[in-house]
Structures are given as C-alpha cells and as structure tokens.
Amino acid sequence: MDWLLHETTYTDKDREPANFWGHSTWSDAMEVFKKSGARHFVPVHLTQSSSELVLSMVGKVEGLVYPPDTLKL
Image (tube, rainbow, N blue to C red; front, side, top):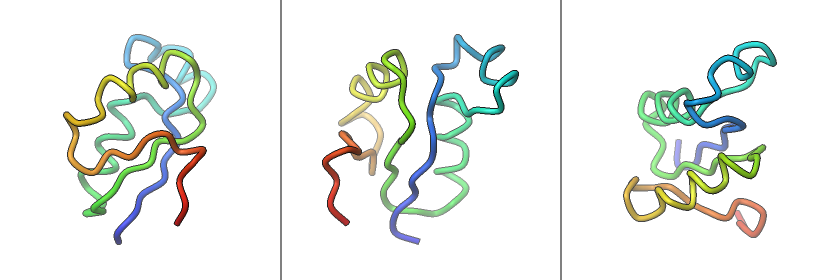
C-alpha cells in the first residue's frame, strides 16, 4: 500500500469525545499508519485543532502529507 487516508478528527487531549463519537485521535491514526506499511499518510476529516497539530508535524513524520484538500492522486 502506498497511501493511507485516515480520519484524524481529534487530538490526543480530546480522547473522551473521540471515543464518544467513534472518531480517531492523532495517536490512533498514527498507529494505523505504522501498522499499515503505507509510504504516505493523508489525514482527513480534520478539525481546527487536529489540523493545527498535523501542520506542526509536517517534516517530523516521514510520509505525512498535508493539506489533504489539495492532494491529487
């Protein structure tokens, strides 16, 4: 698999609402990415706080692609 698109709605500090609504946190999505063997990770279904987190991780996480709304596959 080359690309993984995974929802990353919440940051880790918002674990409680993530669990309540059945959404993923940053750590959840990163765990799936690592286990998937994909070369690229595109976080989707971002909120303002998760988007800010993802932007801060660009260049620190190999394969992380942002912004997902302008990605052309």
